Length: 184
Image 1 (cartoon, rainbow, N blue to C red):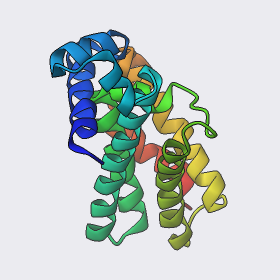
Image 2: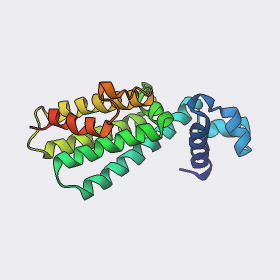
Image 3: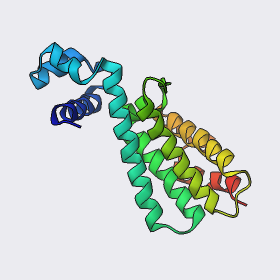
């Protein structure tokens, strides 16, 4: 990837961190980088194309973190717990990026790299569960259930639904309890 394109992604990431996804503007980005409108559109067709590139990088970063975790933990249950914690922490600490990755339905025909990145991380988690011999459901179904759970937990916490009377004030305890549903 050329330097200008990578810098556009980097600056967009910073804009998202400061002001959220909705504040990203091709015009403002061009001003910040001192690029003409035509120069901007040589690198990205439109704002959605640029945001898709940011989302791909996000998936790659999350995948890299999970791969490192996989290298350091051999116990299946502990590994899945660590992966869930990684997802949760990413979702809470990078809410706008998480939103970009998971709350938008990206067209897999237009953005095959993004689709591949998202699917790669799913397969990575699924492969971890394939190695576990003590799960209740198939690895694919268990991974899908995990995704539904962790995304729900991130959404509840992001919306500040952390009521102790509902047991939502201790997400790490919920993660551990959830594993009782996945593992025998």
